[in-house]
Length: 527
Image (cartoon, rainbow, N blue to C red; front, side, top):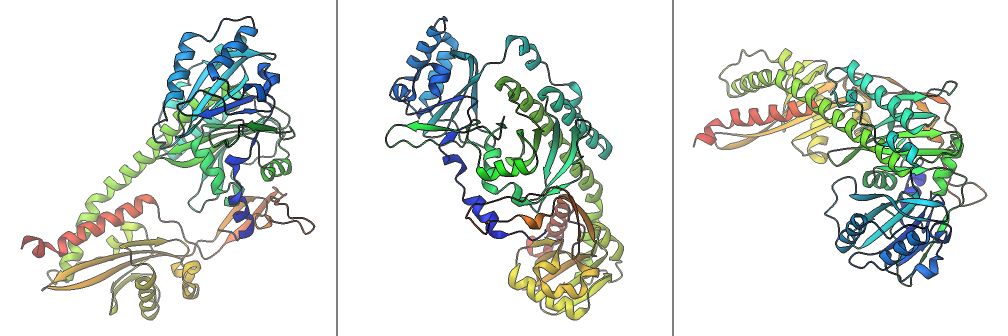
């Protein structure tokens, strides 16, 4: 990964985004404590939305405030079903979160000087937040309730189908949201992100295939994306509204969609010439797989119900991603199971002397798609080598390093020279290393074997959206954090890297180790 200014990353991580104490001005916010419907905080713009100043709302029961404002709008009180849902939600904390937070969306909950208001209630173990924003006009209700296109439910099976699936989502999201650009953005193992699909208005420079450094989305921001299905910034130039709170109460905006925007992110969007943004998180196995990022060149707000509809599309897409990855993994593993079993049995026979004529080279290299392999003794060094490998002395030094720094049963890297500097001398042969350590017993004594696989250097040309090294931390005349300002395509040639070891390869290595242990220790297990 390209070197970045570590100070910039650390400073971004220290930003307490959930404690920013303000919201964006396209809605109003109320908050309180779980088990108590009393209002403990309110946004400063509350009167513009509900006709009640925030200082008058503090201490009032939420139900009373909402009934009053709805009645003032020539409506009856809260609908019984909405009131019951609110009271039930406020009474207890939500279940532990394992991905997106559980939120309650209430259409046309109340009204005020600016008309009907939709609402979204979110909860933590201690606090609740109710966010209010303009209701979706009745003329657009049908648009928001359209079913998810059947094509998104079709799980892709090939690489071509996968690319088409990603393009379909980008196109559907652009149609539904009306944003000028929609990107499917996938996080890579090193934390960077890559645009793998895009739908954009004519005349916009393409971002497809560009890569973004990990510092563009610090971990603290990724945690917020993991908690929330969507995040909207209708206008980066809008002034935030502070939150007025009762004494001793601090609002936690982790699950707030109205949460004000970090100054660093505002400048980042300005540098990209983006005025409005809308993001949806793609979560797989409780981890953030990627984002659907929508950009627009002028202010644009999408109503809550439409954002929820877009999030439904993304959730269906996530199911397709999971299914596609699982099917490819199972297909690859099932194809290799027989080879793994035959190889493990053959090596065990070779180790015990039962079959010294076993030809291991082709099978050993094929198992993990490597160019070189070494069978080594943890103490005595290389026993046998196959294909393209470092010298015996270099292997012995590598084994010493592995035992001292990576004693785990399976270790893998596609950038060995970065972790182990002596490997730079043979990076063309072995920039990638997969090491499997096997401990077994023979005649009552323990012995250890290492299986080392090597992949050669594979120089890569990476297309970055701007030079990622130019993310600076401090202006020379101030102490203001600042993101990088250039997003023009920038090419980097990465050396000292090999093709990464896939999850499927690592699973094959794990199964190989397990079978080999069983074969080598058959006598011990029999006793």
